[in-house]
Length: 150
Image 1 (tube, one colour):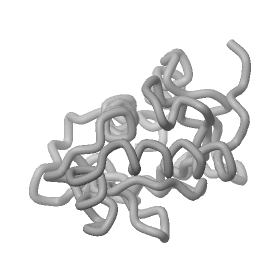
Image 2: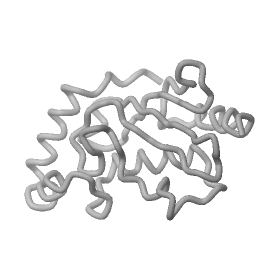
Image 3: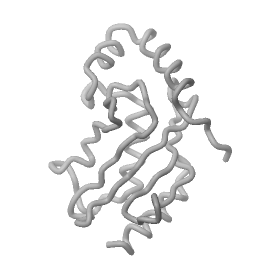
Image 4: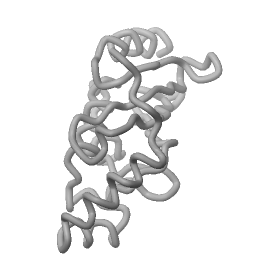
């Protein structure tokens, strides 16, 4: 299992959607890095995440947590992410870590009313999208990490 995870780490490091990807505290089953959204309002910053693999990986999905506070309907205030790809009912053991990270980036780039953990923000996004965008951009500028260079 550690060999597979190490190969997946190298694959994910080559992807342009993340920077500073590395094992957390030397543990190959815990990764940290910065996710770089492409679309406003989140592309004004970078978001620290943690990807944790179960000892039973790949039979059990990894867990993704955002450590950077974000104004997003699909991420709760504790950084838990509404990501069906990593739910037990949708998980497929052939799914690679880079696919989990790409799905996370897609969630941030395109908030989905079907992938919601914060109903208040989902309602705001649907009813007053311009207010949501303005608040999310301000929140990103205040809380997100600076985007690293290429």
